[in-house]
Image (cartoon, rainbow over all chains, first blue to last red):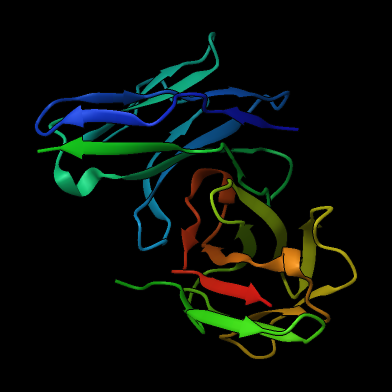
Length: 116
Length: 115
């Protein structure tokens, strides 16, 4: 079984600054994937970034990067140069290698508010 | 860019009624999923579907729920007799192949309100 923990209360960041959203996980699977999704107030789920457990380097996608620390079981999302449009709920999720059809397990999410 | 679509965007129904939520996954995707999100809570897995059968289902997915891929494009979730606690946002998702290494693409969701 997989478990994702997101315990930060609502986060605030000044526009153009960087912010880190925390995520820790627990799994017994030897191979797994970690994902971050953004959910704006309109409700849709937008994929941001993926990190494989055996990837040697931290994933990056534009202004998003994932600070993956396997020994600590953490996969924090770093958003650089925050924009007003980054205000949303952010979910960390993982998928274990339990077969070809593995489900995503989500954390509770973190609300990010970007201040002008 | 191809995307997952869902209809309707909002469904209001009376308790005990049947509802069918519809999804059109991305055309070349082979793995399909339903998730739900009760307001203010985390996204929860309901069911996964591959090769015309259910691959995995959660404890939420009881006998009141069913899924179907009636043709080559649609993927539906049916709730036979809705309860108040079924009120939630329901997301359909699809994945191309080797799901571990590929993201699931989510649809915009259907907000179900049970009165």
